[in-house]
Image (cartoon, rainbow, N blue to C red; front, side, top):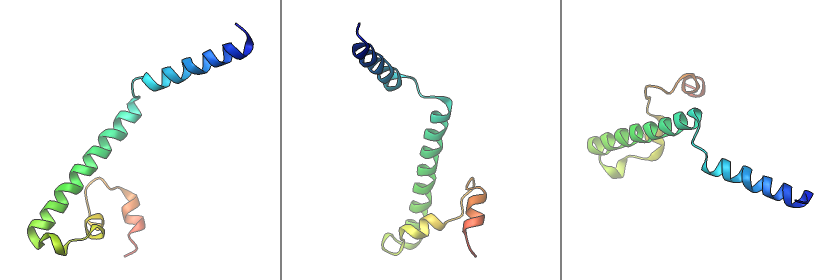
Amino acid sequence: MTGSRARKAEAITVEAKTKWAAPSLVQKRRQKRSELMLWELEAIALAMFEERGFATVNVEEIGRTDRPGRGCERAAGSGG
């Protein structure tokens, strides 16, 4: 193979490996955390809708709700 063809073949192989590789443990944890956060926010929103009605609840209120697992960034960024 010539140098150009070899580089192209190598690039295709690397792309195929990254495209079809199994997700890493870190990626799996991030995905799971994202799913849990969505479920948690959905439950919070539904509870607020039931309590106060859909029209009176806005996205900012749902986001400001203190939730377990938010960590230190919530406390540092709350501002009061």
